[in-house]
Length: 182
Image (cartoon, rainbow, N blue to C red; front, side, top):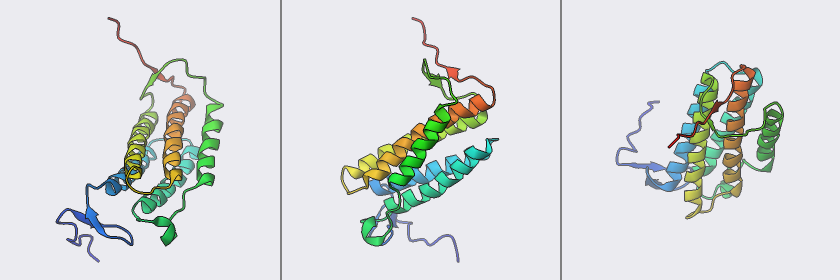
């Protein structure tokens, strides 16, 4: 089977179980950005990470595939595609709480950086925030499960905490923001 089908050459793509739409429509922007997030997490996993980070990120990558499938499907409930829900959100919250316990409380804003792994996790966090914005844009015009928005919001929080934890485990401090003097 060839990878190219030529069906998208006119700037349209097919949704799962649905119509063909422009490649720049809100739904494609939403699941395309989730796909980008998944790729960025794959890059982060190429950095030296604690084993529990890698396992957690691997699980999240699989869940993001489910998020993308749900976003790529008009009326996902009718096609039994809705899969992300309260248990997935609770798992993210548990991981946030677990890692925050080992971190010093933040007393100032921090910059992305420190270790390469932390920097990659910060990049993933920003892509996650963009994915969340794209899903909110889609939700303004079409039905979207609120669980997807909550999941992406918690995931960006977790990625922030994991970036800090990556620095902490490597013995590196967070990179403090230095306000410019006038």
